[in-house]
Image 1: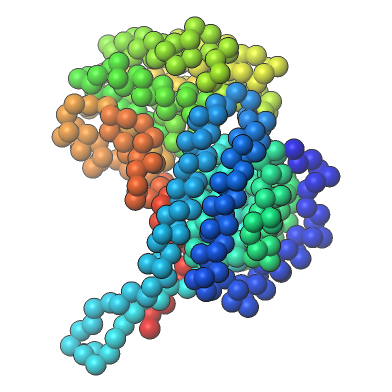
Image 2: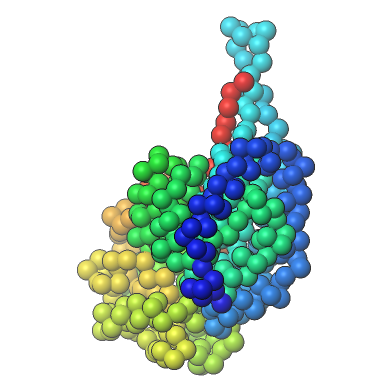
Length: 442
């Protein structure tokens, strides 16, 4: 695990930035052959180090299942890199645009050129996927990159810092290890784009620092993602899919995880009972003993989530059990939640979900969603397509899945992004390339 002694020295940071910027200005990354070779090397990095990657992730996040890591960290990342390789020529080909009678003898093209030297700040919850997928897009776009992995997932950060120079051109792609001090030093420099994934508070700091240099930002910040349960939906099916999205992936430490459930008051107990059954089917009678249930990333986040439980103690319907020695918090359901409840103030980002009962789902769901900050994701369970369409048409969210959770993120070709305080950020299937190139008219 990366310790303070392993952190990049502050004096070294300026040198590393200068090296990558110089490489970009020399045109090192411009040729398609170079980009393709680096992408192939990045794929090779993933292919040859799957076991080491899995061990590093599990060292940082105790209890995270190997099969979940294989799906969300390894397979998805390799798919993204492969997509970039397969579409690289298409991305780099100038696009001819239609002319008009005034320009009959002329031709117009949109030519895509890389933005330049990029700062990529990645999070701890999916430390491989949310580092190497944006990196793949930056390589395909012809950018040079400074990579700052999260110090919270220190074992993965240390592994990335060893693997990147082994497989990629270190004059173009470099890793900076460190915490707030090193990140502050990075942000004091001028970049051509900052790509940040993390919480809103740090996102504000990043945006403020970027504004000093008029640097564009891509910010993916999460949010409180609502679930709407129509009275006619299949509650058993909905509960299983909500439970999977909330507790089976990283114990709820996922920006797309469902946060609160809007349901008719007379159905509140029904969904709680179905969720209880789903929890037992996934993790058994004691989730703490299950090999499929992850732990909270560290003691700081354990204490943060434990305070959520304390502040909302009267609302605990199921769960609420903790073990600080393991950073364990059981799958927890809070009932009778409303806008005055403490849990509704901020994103929980952990294994706690809230039930928000209403008099009439069809009348009340849209105003509730409209009066909250625009979420990264929204989930609707209904057998009535017109009802789902009405909610989608009258609310905003980064992405919507109907009768499931999170699956829109894995749908080929879909961008992934938020609204409002979140800049659109696409980290799937090469679409994020849009943010890393400039469109020049010729």
